[in-house]
Length: 418
Image (cartoon, rainbow, N blue to C red; front, side):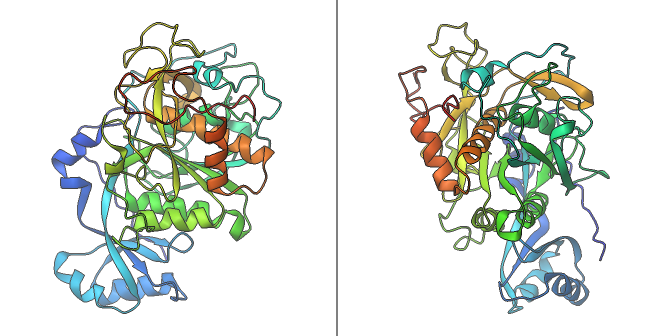
């Protein structure tokens, strides 16, 4: 069955992203009126047939149907029909659909870069010139897509899925391409080199050209990744999510507070995928933002300000704080697991170019690349083993960076011994 794709354009959108504060002003708490995610019970045999039946019976406009991370579907459901739908015994719960956006700071656009250089972030975490290059580890970039023809990425792209607007999974924004380059830009004498330059990338487009999307589009991407997870015969073992929206965690995979996004990530985690997510850019407690708050299912990453690519705090100050301190915009809190460079990060950009931008979006792929290296040297590791392993090898406060804010006890990822 062909399902209608809904496009949501929220507020004033920048070339790379918008703050969730803009979203909140226009859609309270990011909720999209009359748009829902229907989660079916696990014993439902055919979610597609059930979605068709419910659409016909209740006059619904169905969008995505989920088979792997969830059994369920996303739909436009008028408020007057919601109670009757919820009474169907095949439904476990219904979640309101919400807005998500990229967690990158706005940028002026791309540039060209000829001879290869080691980005400061990749150098800062010790990932330059490693023997371990993450060979064959498959990483999904759940984002705005990837420029699949980029000369610094093309040979590492395995495929993808479009869950957003447009006709393909190529990147119309630049953000996803930037994330992909930090993870796995080729070591090929041009442009930049990624943390794991021989890892394979999957372009999972869940955000539109303005860097905006919904829980339902993100779950569509998670469903695709889960279909290709080890438990389902696939090989995707790492997923990067440099995006976020408002929300909290029930620490029970969404089963207590009816959170479909949380449940989908937990199912994908259990299928063998390690999720690395951005803490967010609101200078707020990350527990107020999802997926960052899901500390039972993801590895959450804050942003370090680093200006010179080396530890010690001897570089010049950045726009977001002193060298080797945490960025002033970075979210914080107990749900944050690791820090990574996230200020003035040079990486690949749409149209075959390169760009320097900032955000917890830029910190996250440093950890995703490190997770790929860890799994390459520790095959079969669970997400908890990856998290604990990276934390054990990471840089504690006071040994290469400081935390004048006293908000960031998390260590900074190091890849040099992976």
